[in-house]
Image (cartoon, rainbow, N blue to C red; front, side, top):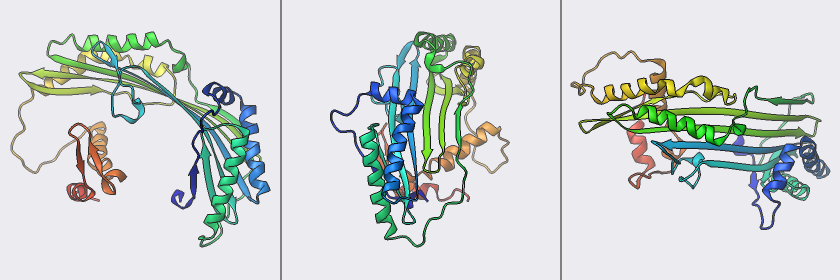
Length: 330
């Protein structure tokens, strides 16, 4: 269990290597291999029977358009603190995991240098020593051969190389088409792209370089009919492929229908009296029902801690949250 692994994360000190140097390291498998080798050798020198290292770079780009403006969404974790512009974020770091005296130790750092690699390995070994004092039994790994391989998500067009102006033009075109319906008062569209570059090495000789690319894009239309508002979304599922996923989705071609369905929803007859009945649901709607009625209410921050409703600045206690969800069938 992850909870049983002692964990430490070091912070980047003032004057640490620049992002340019880190980016150069991420681009070179040889340099990542050398960084990992320093940590693995230090862990072995301190008595670790097994050690592995992951050097990871996460990049996320989000482009959001509201009507004919490019904006962001404040409060969403992957949109960052600047909701007034296109968001492009990059995180780089590495971690060391060791097995020593039959117990795990784990440490990580955002400073990708050989000196830091050695220090993080020492810290991981210290944590393993501490963990060993409370172990019930030794952790024993099954035999596994070494793997030397590379993998990259198959894709035709790297989304991070598509001109930003082209992506912005697509979102504005979608919103313009949605707003052609006179009963639509808001169009909202977005594109999300992920790039995960991960290098893995262990003390048994494995050396694996991977890059995962994911693309996602969607939009919604909000109708306003006699003061009654309703929205309809057009989703495309995120896939581990490139920008060709966005091109194939033909978002603009779905704008008219999505807008019309939003209007239809706003004009729908009011709900009838409550009664027990049978509902036949489209699989997509069923997934949404489970997601909203079971998935969110059982999140850790709702059931254990507290949750903040930022729109109204209210907090929901664990007791109140559980009371509101305890009737969900198991």
